[in-house]
Length: 404
Image (cartoon, rainbow, N blue to C red; front, top):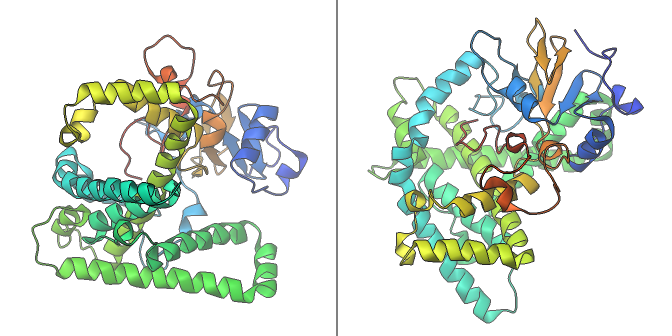
């Protein structure tokens, strides 16, 4: 059942076409129309803490909101599903089962030295660059560092971006392949636009498709090299390869997962780091509080690790506030309402409707956060505030680790 006649507010053209200036245009629509807005004839956008729970959280005895066909495109889509692209709940649960070990606390502790080594190289290079130049492009360096780290974890080898100070050719291909996914989603919604684009820009579309194929081929090559390594190193693939025979995992299936790890774990992390660095530089008082917490908690640089920083309340608050103001994953992740319909944010929504909670529209709403445009880590410390903290979710999960 479609919802074109379902009485939900939105711009008049929202019932006939989808405007794509996300995420800030969607934020403006919610500011004008409220917590639920029609953004397409059969698609509703929400921006509340309750809508996060209603749409994405699993509830015993209730049907799951499955992923929409938005997930059908992307890398390796024609050959294998990944933990991100798979839509079938049972298949997704099976993937979570054999991927969970790779992201357990024990596994992450075993892999931590790989991250620490890359961070040490990063700090050293930033120091060298800072001495030679009046300023550096910290966003570029964050991207080089996060791609090096995720390359080491996902494929057993670094891309050496920190060492060279330049972007590995494959990294730019990864970014371009994401554009292909965005275009595929657009063309699916508007077939006529797709036909016009292919006619007017045939060379550009061909180039994007070629970039996607190169990304897939290079990913397969890296995965097969890692599979053929005789090593006792601990990385993401260590645990996955242990399930290879029992779960009949093909090389292309493993490559699809590895591609997800790179895309989800690199640029998003660099985005969060860039945002947090920006706001700390703009707010020296907050930076001073954070520096004091860290410097009074450790006697040496070597003491700083995942376990020892877990108790630093203000550090956690700074990170959460940065991701609230600039969500690393700014676009909504659409779901389909179960056939029997469901209640979302107090509204009965007919089955088959596409729904989502928009991350930025939720985290930057004045209905959810006092002074939402003010960088204020203190809102995450203590309990004396009226903010709806659960309205800000990084990667669908409320302040927890995420596996798609």
